[in-house]
Length: 349
Ligand SMILES: [Zn+2]
Ligand SMILES: [Zn+2]
Image 1 (cartoon, rainbow, N blue to C red):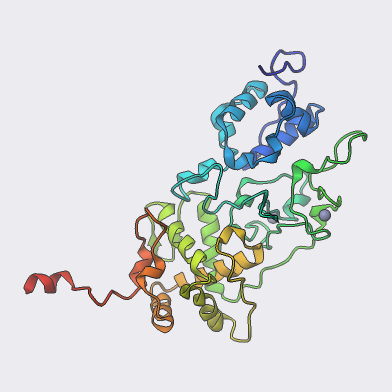
Image 2: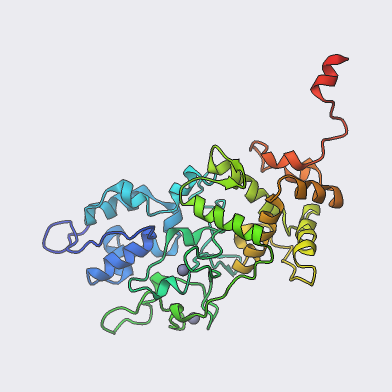
């Protein structure tokens, strides 16, 4: 049973409104602090002592039990609270939301084989506002540039390189009054809003505009590519995902990255780590470089991709989607197999 809070029964005395696109966990930190509780105390009271709530990626898990408990103590609507999680992205960005494993376009958090993931991006300039908070879309792997400030997103503290973990910033502050600001690095206390902004050096204007359109349209759950309109945003994002996965991979198609760079940065470029398989596990800078290359290939569709396929020797098999998923329109640019017989010729025979 949920513990009784405050004077009004189960309801907490103070329950702040979620801000636009605020992450569920960030809103929870605000609720806890507004009611004079540390975030761990809040979780212990809601889910039982000692709660392992903060050890998991709760925004991705989108657990209904958690949402219902929160709705109960804050008086909010369960659907409205579910909207603060990452689950709704599954309605238009990808096929399957995987609460406990890898999910397309969602940056991972936590530790895996001693690798700590830096999946909580932030824009230092957005954090300088009067009411700084962490947004949902900062967890998306294609969101590499703040659409408001046009600066590269950051994925670690510039002073100690630790990932951003706003819910842990109160660690080590046990006996002090109040709570340290959520913009402080949980490890060294550096104010992340003071991190120096960096501009991504786009080499191609057309690719930059396409990526900015992608970011703009995703907020409307739509996708456009020059004069091509897609019935569902996922139709576009599926192809972008295949390209981001193949660009810079260890396979033949990985040569595509260098191929594009020779066109857009003939004076020289930094290669990406070809050992990393998953796009979501790359640094923000590598993701930006790969997205730029993908966007460049999608411009003047399908001419650039047709040329790349011819030069590198790419085949349809290099761009097949994951097992169990339907082929995508990227195959339009791939050479037809030698065994292919056009339907009309077949009929005339
Ligand atoms: Zn910003
Ligand atoms: Zn730090």
